[in-house]
Length: 447
Image 1 (tube, rainbow, N blue to C red):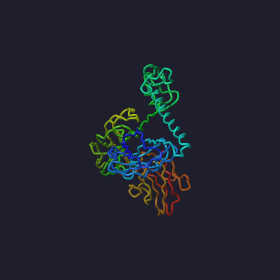
Image 2: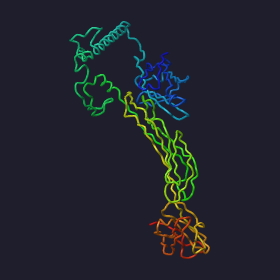
Image 3: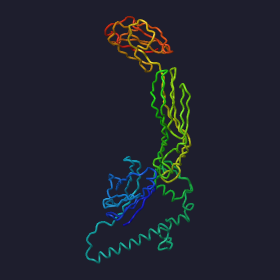
Image 4: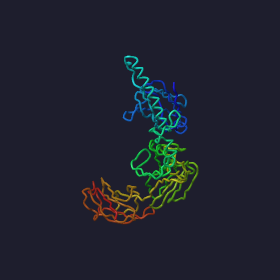
């Protein structure tokens, strides 16, 4: 049995799986060592697409022995001669971590056997002619390739005399190189429209460029995320308890990896840092660990406290294209950051009171929300006044409307009150109300 060994890093190789109709004659052994080293142990699956027009199917004649994943090629796989593809899928914890595609080639045969012609001598003559034609074809190939037949130089009268690589190398246009720059007018292979092939480029290089297209990886930049479970809105003067902040670093990717040393765009993290700005305390810390314990803090006025996490990283590897050449440049060493903003605000207060003048807002309902239109519903008043209070820095209300959207601001009285060290504007209904208040909605629109 023929055995073909393939490394999972050898992505440019074409796998010859045998001749049309062969079964159990070839085993393709995929060496999983590189892929296990990079992604960890898992399981493999193999798909085969025999032609570009057929759908792919999962191969069942596979087995794994250690780091070898073995495909025994069956007659199903060799049923159609020509070029197809196979794709190795690598699963880690049932997650598809990597796929690798190779081209496969099935050699054609001479067809199914038929009845020999009668008489036997005619069949033998045809067989002899085929052998003679094969020898002639071999000699012609030699002549057109290197200018010799049976090892002797071709005669000047031979059509291959001035049309072979040896003649072009000795006599033709700079030893097989372009004399002048050539502008590509029709995209072909690796050459795109208007590409310039410079003078001095060898014909072999040009032919290789025509027959094999160069593919380039997608480069994804790194980024950082920050996990810190403090509330986004906090009452002024309240304490945010000490808790963990975790910085996660995604190194980005080079995909496909091709021949780069790593499939990560950035190098490894070299340091993590955190900084707290706007709080009642100053806090900065750094280290090799990505987890920090942020101490408790507060803020005694409206405004933002921002916790920012940073990750510093080393230079990344040089990305490569499918030909193994450098693609763009390595990502320089640098840093990425992510932030969490905690906004300290003064709450709104609303509710009912039997007092015509209040000296504290503690008996009202607290609404910790940002400035904007508000809707409050009052019910079951018992000879009580309706109240609304908010930070005096917001200014006067523009409207107070009822449930039918009628304007009522003229029947509310405005005053100011100092509470917990801050100044508040207080609106109170002009009259005490009993029962379900006619005024059920207050639309607070700040100037």
